[in-house]
Image 1 (cartoon, rainbow, N blue to C red):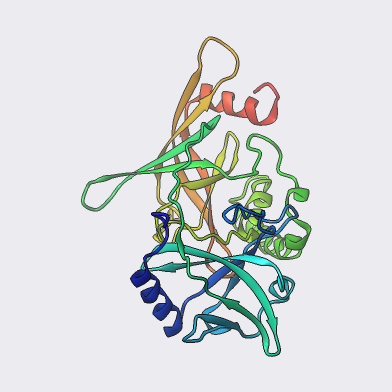
Image 2: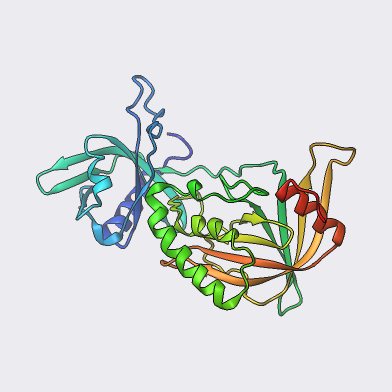
Length: 309
């Protein structure tokens, strides 16, 4: 038995936990198993995303059979396919692989003998740009929050609407219209280019089960220019506060010249906090309140590819 597999007793505890209910799961279709190598199952090559199933859509029978009630249409299409089912048990990420079966009453999943722990892999990245936010708590302890580029976001470039998937553009347009109307009244959004990245982040759907539930994640950097920096977060344990001032250190990796790295120190204030409709994602549009003139020139030229005047 693999060390990542649950023991028989652990499996029984998990099965009872699922039977008792209130357990949301995510389901992802997989390629067919490779003959002679049952462990090599991979997501389909086409654009397939995990689908979240709510607890009320799931009934688990004593024999370890999961019945799906009113599943979304995207899951109905998984019938007859191998799927990876992921969920949390006492904050530990678990998964099993089984077939999505079509039955008279709808869809069903048979929980197999082997249930696995999700491997805890801490990926190391080497970013050309990152930022850290610093502030002091009431107990005078200093807090440091890391910020890394949002996946797929091209920083120091003009955001484009086409970067938002077509399926999400309608919801993004609704957000944009609301935010632009508010910006005209508040006059805090500058030229408003960053709102495209804000709307893109708020409509993105990231359904993932990790090795440990609730682990704090770095903020995502969504936009940067010489006047502002925008952070995104899906953490449940708090975010930046509108109007509060924070110290920020920005680190640049330079590809040309004798200096390999450049660090820029500044202070910023979240002028506006934007939240998704379901409350799961937030963006802080932060305006720099102090930034050395030479650093402002450096960031301006990097973001616009023009000379600072």
